[in-house]
Length: 312
Length: 251
Image (cartoon, rainbow over all chains, first blue to last red; front, side, top):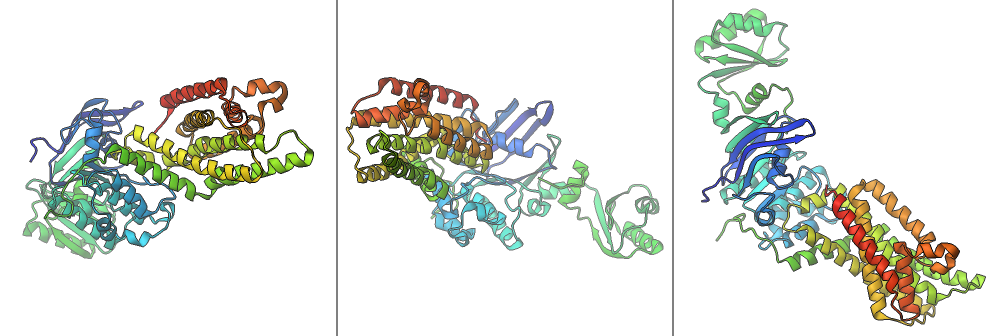
């Protein structure tokens, strides 16, 4: 096992004009893990990824990928990484398998392309030119192109955007198999369930800095504080969070997540649970579900980034 | 037995990368109907139409003049118009960006493109020469002069094609590349000799189109080498390449 992280970003600053895209970001990616990078639009994810891929030169700070400088050591680094772009990346008139074979031939020891064609269902694309493939088919081809050179490290930008649920599951299995086989995976996604299910480590970015980092379990446990999530059948009456806070007493905090769900943070014990039930009864609201202590990644994300928008 | 995805990274040998890129680009060019029209159909129509038309109005130019001019036109259509349009859309579709993280270097990418152009040009020369000979063409050939004209003409027009493709949007590139092609075909002394343009004829041989046309005619009508015109093409190639290197945007 190498003695350096797969990816090291230290004090990275990137500005476009007077807009700061990345503001002193530091993070690492350990080898042989799946690491998810999350953040709202404009958080600096794509800029960071593109700096790791050697497309952009760091304005301040250091970026090392597999121990190499992505700009200076570009030619040594590129064969060792696989990149899946968010969109595009193939000639408009090319056929899927033809494109995959092309990228394979640029590498020394490519995967047999039949393996990827079969695993990602690219055979169905037949002789259709790239521009007429569906979004999901283009995504799968993009993933296949990232993997065909047998890289040590892959950067995948929203790998399952636009895919139907069955194909998504196939891609998840594939990414997990990559990790098992010794490949490091760095992914951005706006599906929290995807990050929660796949990632060993999650980095949450907001406004160009790292706001949280840890395993999904560490992040959702939120220290020692537990939670109760209350979902009701009809929208809450106005002022519900305040009235529930008053009913629960000190030491708890109530956050309204949307029209029909509230998150109670505090001691999630039988007494608190009883008070929540009683409050529902008194206010004539019918609980649809009452879930204990399972703050999910989406809750954490919304709390940290303070946005209702969950995007890559 | 290794697992399926066990890493085994590495770049293919550079010659294989260049050949792979060249064969892909040539195939895509020949598969595209519009490109084929530009590369083969239009030059052949110009050749047959020019020769037959000249016979009817009893023009002094015959197939011996038209065939070298149409060969020059074919080189211009491929090296300038086809290359510019293809590269413009490669930028649009993120192909160049994607290949930017593959083992293929920018130098290899350019070499692959040039090789693909030469493959298409060989096909064009074969077809146009065949049609010319069928129309009674009797060339007086300087192989060196003709080869130098094709190579330097390709270099000059490819540099200018990439200059357009690397700075304009794909649609603007499409329009500009076709417009310049039409203007040069009509007024650039490609198909017709510069002497046909009267007093404008001296100026027009300083255009890459006129220089290429004259160099081809010298090589295929008088078995000569048009040093001055080859020098003009070289100058356009160097200036175009320098401007492209400064302005080309890969995305």
